[in-house]
Amino acid sequence: MKKSEYLQQVERALVYYQRAGIVLTEEEKQRIEVADFGLGAVNDVGLQLLTYINTERVCAKEMVLLPHQTCPEHKHVPTGGAAGKEETFRCRYGKVYLYVTGEGSKEDIAAHLPKTEVSVFHEVILAPGEQYTIMPETWHWFQAGEEGAVISEFSTRSTDETDVFTDPRLVRAVTIEE
Image: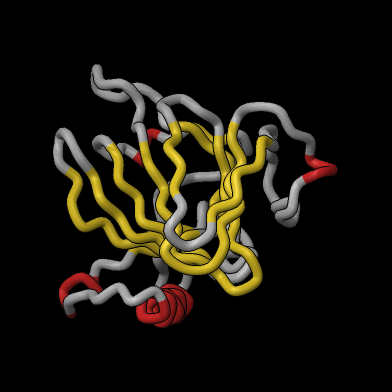
């Protein structure tokens, strides 16, 4: 991703944090991460996030999804002798379409099918104030509705660098070019 695109995505994320009433320090604003998952199509497949804390026991993040932006299907696997990440998503702004392992079909989902491979279609729709917990090693993907979304994540230790994706083209590490 070009640095100019990265900076543009950060600015867009800041607008959404403000809409959700989330106050960030100047230092936190500088630490916003933009994940494009290696596809170069961040507005379709991507995620903007800020990690407040990530210790051996807990992690807290704020995530922004732009309108219809998708975080691709993945699961959190055991890493370093610890179980995969357990995470709770709490919607702060907008609408989140979350898909997890379970009953459901792609013909019946409310979200747009992403430009990546997906295999789970059990739909959970989160509005502001609603939350859902995803257990370790559960396939999941999520997408914002038409107004975008802000999601707080509370979890066990985050080891996103070891996430396993359904789509083999995807990578979690971000490369920023000048």
